Length: 161
Image (cartoon, one colour):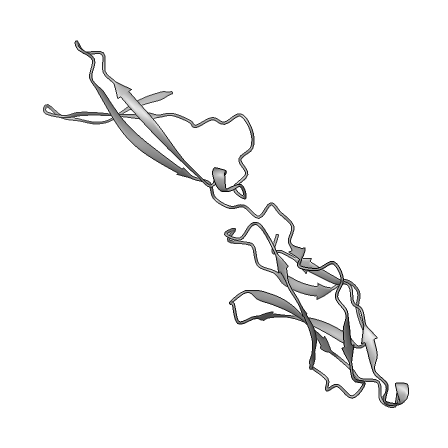
């Protein structure tokens, strides 16, 4: 504990105590019980009789980007017509991350491998969150004789780390 006299005059004497808060294990902000702590602090003088004052200290735990995002589903599948226009949306995918308040918790959706026919965009949806949208890059002319084809893509998600 470090004692430091901050201000002193004839009528009032103020003393500031700087005490490091110590904890015995890592905090996990994603647990609701560890987002905020209210600690009661007492100060007692050595007068006769001793006098005591109390104050509450609120400690808020900041969110760090320490968790990986996860997709809502492990597998997505889409069916498209071969005449679909270039740039058309094929399917939207969405991921969540427990680090919802970390300032660097921004999602970028990308394909794990290059695709001749598809690309990913990261778009804002109606709820102001971001989704990955698989879009058509190129349509092969004359293929499949007017039949439908499906595509199952592996998507990769980066969370701004």
